[in-house]
Length: 214
Image 1: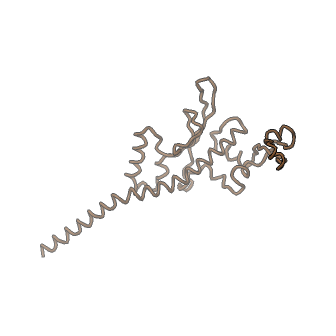
Image 2: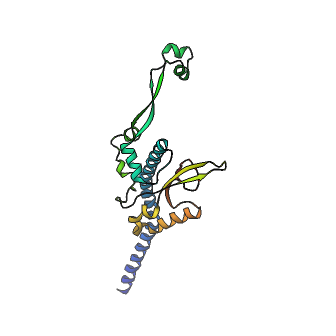
Image 3: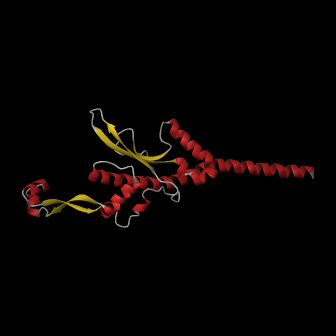
């Protein structure tokens, strides 16, 4: 009887250790799958913020640190586009005429017109009011956004902006399950002197509004 109990205990220990070994392999893999899913959506939102900011700067000459201002601009303001009237004929193309020459000679007319920003940039059905919110956080978190002026080596001041969100906030609801994986992800980024999360643009350098995933 005693021998049987020992065998049962040993079997249970073996099963437990096997499960722990399995989980040590699978948990990081599951986290990577979830991370990619979340990063893909959040990166797209950051790209949309960049697009909106570029449109705002084209009209206003600067970026904005306010989501209220940015969203209202996209919803209610207009952006300039160039409309072409006319086109090269087959005969003109065969003769080697360029579009620039056709414009100069008046065969093609170009004019600047204003169109609704939302419809032109994103489409009229784009949920612009959600631009500030971080996907997968149930609107608990907004992207942190700021602006700055960077002076170049030639003494020119260049406007820059940054929008970011940390991994701690991105994965907050998963921390109890994937705590070690999140710590490892952040630790690796900090070791490489990189932001532990996702961001677009930079407040300390003019980097052409590149994202840290690019």
